[in-house]
Amino acid sequence: MSDTIPVLDLAPLRANEPGALERLGAELRHAFTEVGFYFLRGHGVPQSLLDATFAEAARFHAQPLEAKTAMKIDEHNIGYMPMRGATARYNLVGDTPVLPNVNEAVFFKRELPADHVDVLAKARFRGRNRWPALPGFREQILATCDAFERLALSLLPIYARALDRPADYFARFFVDPMYTLRMSHYPEHSPTAPNNEFGIAPHLDTSFMTILAQNKIPGLSLRLPDGRWIDAPAPEGALLVNGGMMLRRWTDGRFLATPHRVINRSGQERYAIPFFFDCNYRAVMTPITADGSAGKEPPFSYAEFMTTYQQANFHHAQVDGKTLELQGA
Image 1 (cartoon, rainbow, N blue to C red):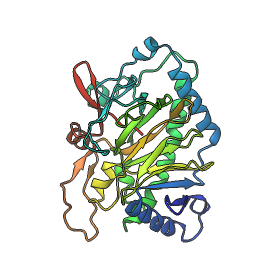
Image 2 (cartoon, rainbow, N blue to C red):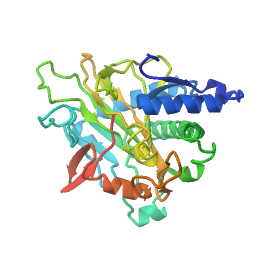
Image 3 (cartoon, rainbow, N blue to C red):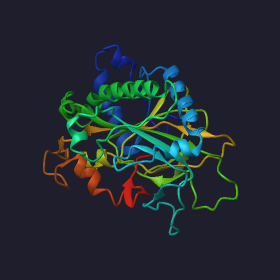
């Protein structure tokens, strides 16, 4: 596993061991310049919390279709996306366009009150969550988002040192950060399916950081920089982390955004709960260059970034005549 996908262990840093931050920074730099993914151990997120969240994903998707479609995905990318409701725009598998993705998903963002300034202003990507009539579901999902957010914030000093910046460099950009929890369901992939059909087609995430809890049902694979596709293992107790197009742009192209895909040939129903973590909605990100010179692209904000990539992002869905760009893995 570590020969291909690096493994970072947070335990020494959490124990305040001297030199731990610098070692992890160097390991992260290697991971993002050579692979684009890494496994995370010693992260402190309880397995019981993750298991309960996978169970909630299964419970949500086991509802009747009409209950799920009552939460139809909106312009903020919040809500339910039906099976085959999205199609990849980037084609990384050849000349034949890919077919709609064989998965269904529901998306949740930070819980905002009705009187929040962005809600009142109807700011894009800053809408309110809608919840299913499932007792305890909302509480479990919010607890999971809180745990993933705490973990992501704790990783920021490592990212800063990997880029030779002070440990607190990213702190000001991630006050009230943006995030999305996607809860996906992948049915068994048909053995007679065409080669251009996937659970989710090869794509790049848009995020600064994606945290993926491991489950025992395989299906995820990633494409290495040399073009090889490898199946991602699922080591017990580890989380899988990758960066997306936001991280790549913010680092002036130095850090990789690695293509990945899902094909569920397990013979079982597969669920995934990726957590996509980004900076503050209004933070302005200036590309971080190695020598301090101007970056290849100008400074940008979250809203500008998501709007810019709206037509080129990895997949889309039509909702009420609008094209929505979705996050997923």
